[in-house]
Image (cartoon, rainbow, N blue to C red; front, top):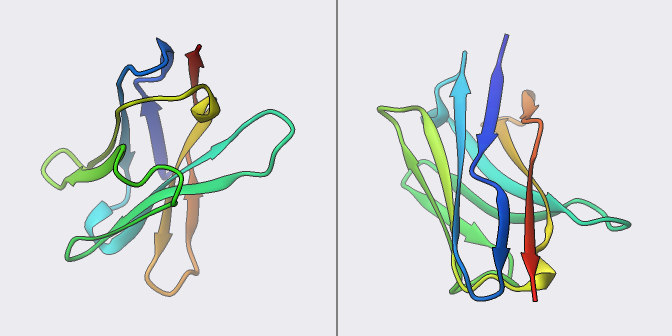
Length: 117
């Protein structure tokens, strides 16, 4: 069964950094569009960043210049480096994998990121 396992979340002060990891099993991340999404309390889940073959990356305007998505095919893992964190970045962060035609869509269980002011 496909698994996306996130790690690296935690509590950090504003201005700090965290790196999230998403380890994938039973899929090859290189042929999927891999993404990070987040959901804050009382809000809808929103896109943070995606990476696909190329690599081609895409970011939400709110994180451009602060966050960087990357992947390591040898480890079958996707990362999200988060710098200059703000309290508004507080959310549960989810890893996502979507196949090329969109017919397969997988989610991780999420990891909590809390940024204190």
